[in-house]
Length: 132
Image (cartoon, rainbow, N blue to C red; front, side, top):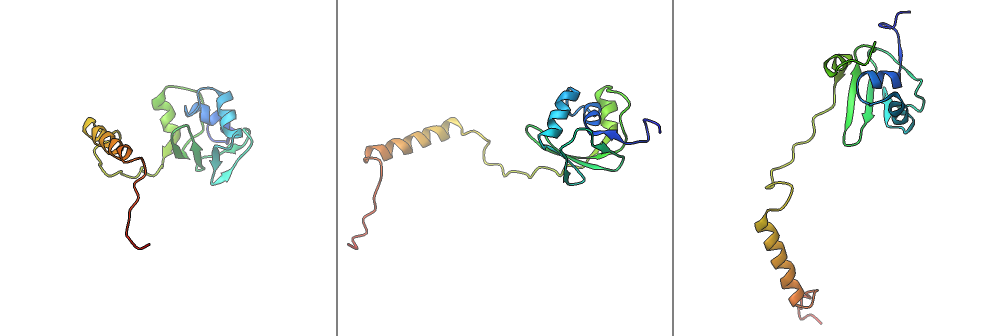
């Protein structure tokens, strides 16, 4: 059985594909439950992956869905590692433009003015409808 056509350990493949810096990190990623193969959660770093398997990997700030195109032969440069998989992660939803993530200086002043007006009235403002 040749190394290029056969199955490969998941931790080794994650390391070759440059999703983990070391094989130990790849093992910990798998053991923590952050990796799924064909929608099945795996708990063993020795699980074999084959060409055509779909991996779901929960990294620190994102979830990536990868289709295995080839087993790795060595941990090479990034362009070589990207040939091992096809990224089929759905695109992130587009957020509506609301002027940016952080409030502007004008927005902060308006928020401060709003809060200071509420505190001048004793904190909580009660509405009197006169229905008592």
